[in-house]
Image (cartoon, rainbow, N blue to C red; front, side):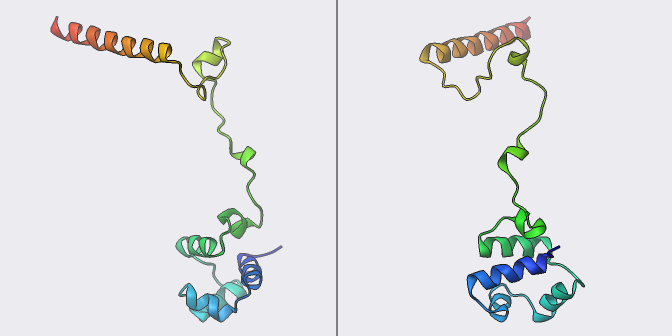
Length: 120
């Protein structure tokens, strides 16, 4: 099983730079880098983000060696109210001018009712 250090070594090799150059560019002491190699420590969160950005790779791959598949991170929630009524999910649909007008009128009406209640 590869460690974070192993994956960093792969990235360094693929970029065609030396470990020393990598450490200098990211301001990593060679002692810390050696500790990563020996498994004595691992990079901190900020440094991992910096390393991922430097190599233009994902944190998922840097930490686990696997890319996260987009379809696995879909939101799992309760159905929207319109789904319960058998309607399609219309969140991605563009509203017609008529529909926009209706919504504006409804908002104006609810504001009117709210103001009328407050006046009583």
